[in-house]
Image 1: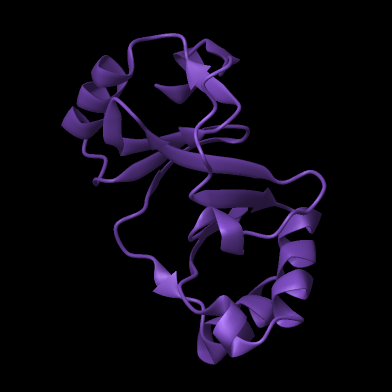
Image 2: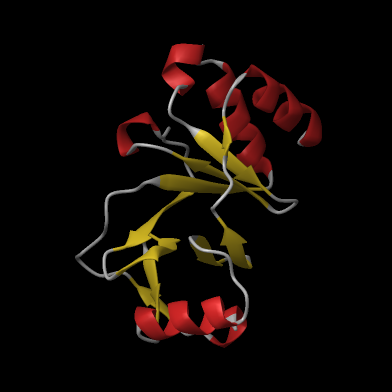
Length: 140
């Protein structure tokens, strides 16, 4: 489904980020930035990881700025559908959400355009010391 979508720029109504997505070398840069933070600075952040990407979820003010990462947020009209903050699918979001949910996507989920992904966000892991250690080893 995702490869058939015609993605378009988000336009002027860019939502406030509620997460960031880092792929490849950017995921390792993200871990380095997070590793320099204290446990208190990481409180409230959670992660979801795949082989291709690392998704950090949390309040916009706690998300780091790293050149090249992209940000995500739930869509205002379909809060179970998270999208890049800089792009939207060319189809109505309610139809995209209904189609992917009917195909078994767990809610809420992130629909990403590069690389094409449908990633469930229903079980994020708190970014604590154990999670950070595991991620550092997995992305080494």
